[in-house]
Length: 345
Image (cartoon, rainbow, N blue to C red; front, side, top):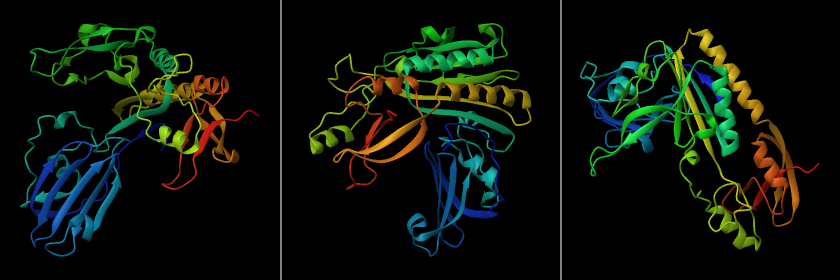
């Protein structure tokens, strides 16, 4: 999967399927369960931008395990997984008792527009340091110099209630202290940005919203590294990898996290597309391809070389001490332990 890219949905031909019943919902995945007029089970799943529709072969069969996949299509942007039942029926040619069900999902208007009229821009970067994440946000601000960089401020109205958005405040890349920020191009004042306590920052005509999320701006998270202690126990060695590890000395620790950015715009807006493409190139330059070696840890033998975009701060950290690796992994359950690190050549 590309770490930076555009996606404009292309809807497949309508299924032309009328069902006796259909229900469901949810998010990541959205799942719907139905039945044809001749008693065949139907299962629909939307996750990671991919939609699948399964129909059972015989009455009583499970549609997923014993049925046929009549539609599999990459529809939405990467990591998207929310769709209402009405949106599914409308976009993919499905009816229930001859009609399109009325929309009952109060948040349906917030879901990704998959009709093909909207283009989505996504950035998903692994093992990014706080230092580099701030540089990336600064690149975004430089690409859209008139945009406002804002952070959402949440409050809890009542002790037993959840957090709701109260307002947005201006911030800078150097002062990021919330898990997500928004670069909004179009407004000149904070009062030009519309917010809703329950729905967040609202889309508005003439405004481009670029979201950037990076949990470690706000939270000191301990990363789940289940494989690392297993490798150390089996091999009798100590390994260090980027991320907040339990009881790791501060002089060795290097905090990394995933950085996600996204924006959407009308597919015919070539000006916005061009600016986002230039921003993507600028981000790529901050995380250049790095030559890595894969080592079988038990024997110390080199397996091969690979090139991957890696945060330069991570590269320097790996090279500055012993037993420092970008990742420790095994390719299958009983396979050898493999370490990945920058080459020293």
